[in-house]
Length: 203
Ligand SMILES: [Ca+2]
Image 1: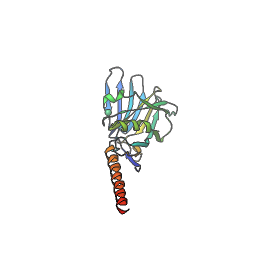
Image 2: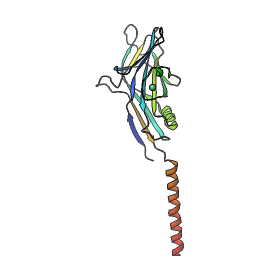
Image 3: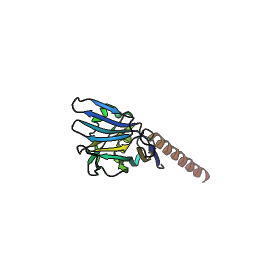
Image 4: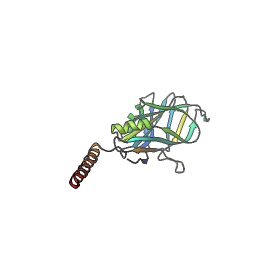
């Protein structure tokens, strides 16, 4: 089968913030950034969910790349710092950003430093392969901070229009359904049998 490619936009993205005093969560899905920050009183986690049901179940994932445009990195005093550490996690999504997504940090995909402004890419091929093999409909990503008082922000789907918005770029090779494969084999057998009969008839 020939390889195909899809460029997928999030079904939802934004932030979920946990207030440590009250234990309450707040959800923001309309702001210009997907941000992660770790403070003494609260923690913001960036959440993105991408629909992947356009990729046939069982397909081989040749590559899956998450691209985010970083346009914000600050610490408590407003100074830029590229050494703060953050973590990208993956989880099975449901298409929406809700308070419960804050806890979806069980599977770490990679750590990264604040870096610099511009496009940052994450190779998420094995994770997306696992979801597609399992027939999951949404690929969820969670970004959390490890360095207190530092915030990283990426342009969200609702963000500044001149910046690239989040995309999940997937190249995949569909695998034939068993029923289709069987049909091809049966068809081949009929052709072989017909040719044999024809030769027998001619000789
Ligand atoms: Ca969700």
